[in-house]
Length: 182
Length: 182
DNA sequence: AACCCATGTGTACGAGCGTACACAACATCT
DNA sequence: AGATGTTGTGTACGCTCGTACACATGGGTT
View 1 (tube, protein in one colour):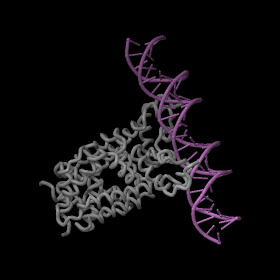
View 2 (cartoon, protein in one colour):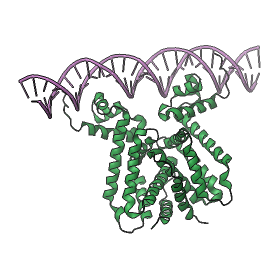
View 3 (cartoon, protein in one colour):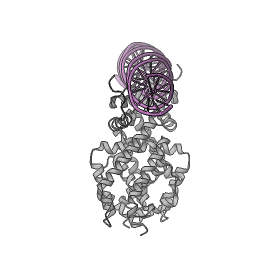
View 4 (cartoon, rainbow over the protein chains, first blue to last red):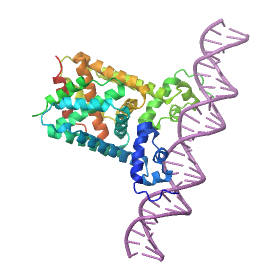
């Protein structure tokens, strides 16, 4: 067998797991499906990740990091005093308008924490991370509130199938910000 | 075999499915597990519900109805001009403080709509239903916003494990209501 | 009474699953 | 160079799953 000593094996397995969740959902995630997607033998996935929970933790953490990088590179959030509500609403719009796959993937991993305690710390890290990104622009309580509202808005779109209404989002986020201690 | 001509068979299967999701999660839902829980043969579940999606639709619809009845019997929401934000915050607190199982069950079925288009209309019905319950107290846009915010708050608690902060919820809901067209 | 079809029952098949384990190969340390 | 432990590979076991199908039963219609 050719492929011996593959130092990035673990990373490639994580990437494959993310692709699998993206295409088949968490229900389609198994050691075998990941092994096939990563083109490694079955034993290799079970070796690097004893349980699927471990693999999901790694996958969720990686998507979180990717998300943070995306936002950071997008920059916007650090402008001095632009309309934060409008900025956020527009940014949600961009996110939701793209390939639904990407959003579904991140939310599916995120929501999986409901039943999998192992994922909860990672989900908490994400919420905290986004709140921190917002912190230069508002107080901590408002930042946390914005995260909750963004989640609520996105979920309504994703779960009920109603189209995203950017003006509605801007209005709602604006109300939350209007109550912020200045 | 004794149990022939069982007119409530279908209903008992739905009830069993809800219990199974409550105890083992959607991942543990199968024709077989439901059949065992309902104490009916395997063929019976596959006969009444050709696919698991069908069964989940019925289960989600039933939990929605149960929820509506609960709120209706709880009454509160129809008081003339009490503080709606405080009322909602208190009500979320009650909901989250009880057995986590019940909340998990409803949210798990609700969130399953992310990957199962068949569930989306039912999820939409739920959001619309709650918004309607709120409609005597505020305008439609604010009602929808409140639903989103409640979802966001509950999810933060359920997904990240941070304890529920009723005062924070009241403050946030209050901000949303403060912007409502009177 | 005869018929028919919705409903109920039991069993079997093939597929995919997690897990376990024995063995191979290589990197690293002594 | 040789020992050692991490990493990679292949295979097999036992289990649960959805699905299909043949047959039993009995209520409702004609």
